[in-house]
Image 1 (cartoon, rainbow, N blue to C red):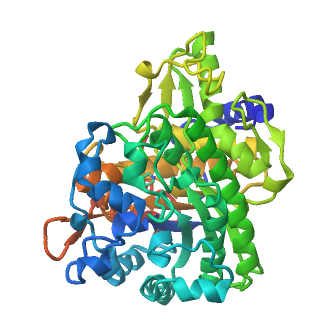
Image 2 (cartoon, rainbow, N blue to C red; image 1 turned 180 degrees about the vertical axis):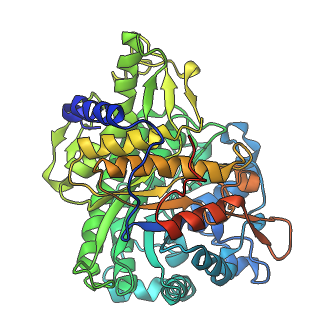
Length: 505
Ligand code: IFM
């Protein structure tokens, strides 16, 4: 978080924690709070029961090429499950019935992503102006997104549209080639000099096309989850093409490109979406989604561990958030940022994806001094992945303290049922922490569960299951079934509170 505000933020969080014990709550979510579920195109579209695979699947994305490539699968450091994409939930065909379920549950909002490659399967380089872009856009791709939005409208749900959720078109990223040889491959995705320009072109195009029905936009989902497993450390937990290790210069280039792309996309959306769809006086609100992760010292009494937590918090969270929320850029990763006019005023809200915390031990020297003097941690001691609901409160209160005036929306929170089957408990425990923060004045406006249904979890394929609704990946009809969390969520939405019998002590 912003280094100048960090102490202030921790103090505020500490005082708040003292004022109200974990799990306690007063008041409720209120009438305007958005309750939603989130999905992403690559993860849900594929696996249609009857629509032919070549229409259902978006084969022009880098992720599609990465997970289906036998060459990429064969390289163990890519950590690919090899799960066929046809085992996906087939939302491309089944979206009407999935949205019926979302409506019956009482959801007021739905977050989905447009796949850049589904709209523009061929290059937009050299194509300028809306009419020219329309001429090269896929009519079927555009029609799909219009149909989703119409289906949401018919069910009284509002869309939150993500424009970039990890995937890139193959015409701007040769995922397999770059996985094999990052130096020589072409095109190089986030390392292409014009990627922010092309993304802004696509964002403006979508904003003009869908703007009459959409007011809330997200430019990028979890940019650090592109940089870390893409250029620094792919792991079994998550890999991301090009899945390169310790490529510091490229990681820095990609991170700066993602910061610039957010600003460029925000400007493009604001310029193109001039229609106020929901009648609240604003045509377009543009946010970014970040996986904000509390970083804790393994031994809070160790000065080394505490310093590591502060340093890694900056690299993991603060550096990117300072850039997109304050316009302060630390481009040499030394912990000191400079204000940049070109980055300021681009973000109307922050989407917070909250899953877990990181616990780590410190080292005296930076492990990777060429990358950053702040990498003073021992990666072998790193712990992450635990279910830790208190982190939701910690994240929300710190964000409010460090970035006052930025409205927060929880754009993802959920758990793999294989690792933690009590999803109703998970939901209640996390929502209690949201209420705790909200009751202390944190401006948090909505909560989206990840995910509406089981979906293709990137390198894990269908091997991890995050759905409110389960999907049978091997049943020809891709049969869905409600998990216990569905009834819990329905009752929360109805009560606009966590009912006492659901609350977790
Ligand atoms: O499935 C992902 C999603 O695409 C981004 N946030 C985390 C989820 C669970 O890993």
